[in-house]
Length: 157
Image (tube, rainbow, N blue to C red; front, side, top):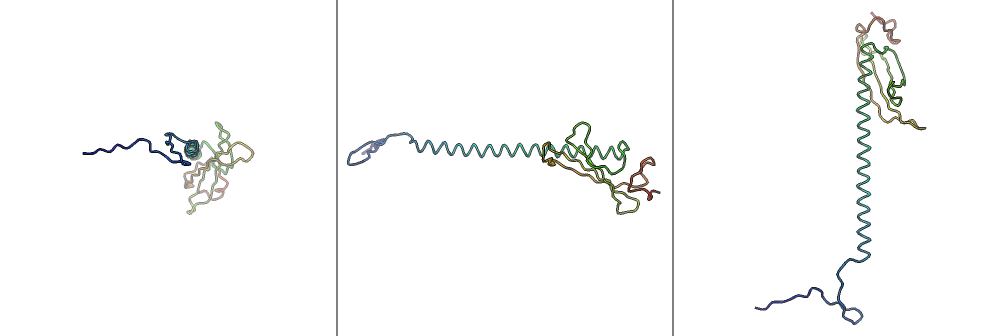
C-alpha cells in the first residue's frame, strides 16, 4: 500500500524562481476586516439609538395617557371647573399642558367633554413630543348645579 504525503506549503513560481507562499493575512485583508467591523458597529449603534428613542416615546405616551385620564377624572368630579380651557400647564411639570373642550352631544341631553394633554419640548421650536386625548359623553342632568359651562348655558333642565 502506498501512502501519499502532501506538503503543507506548495511551491510558487514567480519570475522564474521558485518561492514558498507565506502563511498569514495581508494588509488589505486586515483593512477590509476593520471596515466590515466598523460598518457592523455603526449599524448596531443605529439600532440601539432607535430603540432608546422608541422607549422614550412610549414612556411619554404612557404618561400622557395617565395625565389625561387623571385630568378628566378631576373635571368629572368637580375638582376642575367644567369650561373650555386651552394650554394650561400642570403644576408639577410645566412641559405638560392640558386643555378641555365642550361640544354638544348627539343627544340634546348629552355634552362631549374632551381632555387633551400635550408635552411640549423645550426650545425655540416648541414641538409636541407626546399628545393624548380622551372624550367622554356626559348627561346634562349629572352636571352639578354650581358648574356653569358656557356651551350648556340655556340648555340645562
